Image (cartoon, rainbow, N blue to C red):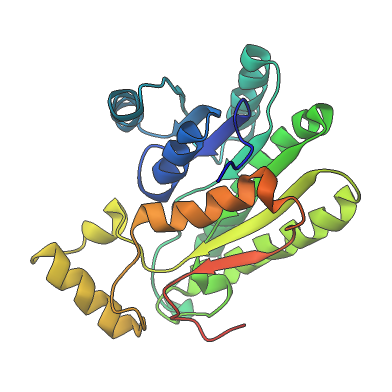
Length: 257
């Protein structure tokens, strides 16, 4: 199926590993010109080299902290100058620390807001002028299933990321008619480096245990590419009438509709 992404210019924050990297790889496969950003230059270089080796394509890289609004804006503007346009922005950042509400003080909540909400807003605002100029655009905000089904052990994630959904839905109405869409991708337990780093036993058995304890009906955690497939569809021309939605990819764990 042609997703209509050939020739589009896409920026993927948090694109050096995990779900962000999987999204970047799929965008490259669809013919998009892709730039990935992340904090670690070494991980960015490794991701760039892997994409070149596997797909025969070059991607741009930018080392930055997504909480640095000016650095994020410079990344977007530089990509637009280089390619002549920006069409796609994938906002993505690491999650806040795990724990119940009482484990954190006000400063922790402020830090979580900055990372898991404000950084996404900064990236979206940096991209919007370019999307408007192009007359076509997609914004995808990668969050977590905690926005749909609060998990007590991940209180900060559910609290601050829910605010990001409010921003996305409000932005949809402010944008009004046109071909710019804004959607939220909410993955559940996924076999990313962050999850696997906490596993000490055999990965297959341990991720199955995680899935069982989390109550995932499919009996396993997601692969990053499975989450990416849903996200890239939302970024595509095929999803032109899908906007303001939250797409949960959690193997059926959450009970919300």
